[in-house]
Length: 249
Image (tube, rainbow, N blue to C red):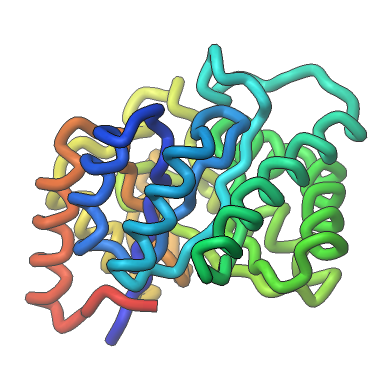
């Protein structure tokens, strides 16, 4: 049995940051490369593409709100037209560099506040899904399983990759618990594995208030910005292998 593991990368500003990212690549199968909105620049994009190609990863664009000061973690009050232009420009920037390296991009995953805002607002989800469907029809969308982006993608028959989170508790409606809620982030690694196995196999796992949830995900998110991300990734892959589950798309 295989499971896809994805990680947001290219969110630093130097070649050294990219070298640290590369340490995660043996443990994942898919990466989402920041493309100039919340983070990333031509150098980090180019190096990240090169490293991801070397590790045979599925490679996607990771656009966010154009707000480098806050790392795309705050909602921006900008018009739909401005947002669409920014997201399109970000994806195109990575697409051009990928083409120069002979890399074919696979997908798009929204970042941070934009990811969350799209899940909270079906109109925004439809706007962004329609943009990707029209301008980047060959790129799938990686987004929250059972969320607004998945619904919008289904309406357009656009390829969608259902994402699950190993270290975030869910609400009873299968949405992510806000980080502001006590217990929203799972710190215990054994509990992370329990939830991961539940998401892979469709077995029950607890919501934030201990209601049993049961659904599956196509891809598990590994947070690369954790200082211990490489150690967590190594432990995760080892635990999955002991369960007969291998990392791959």
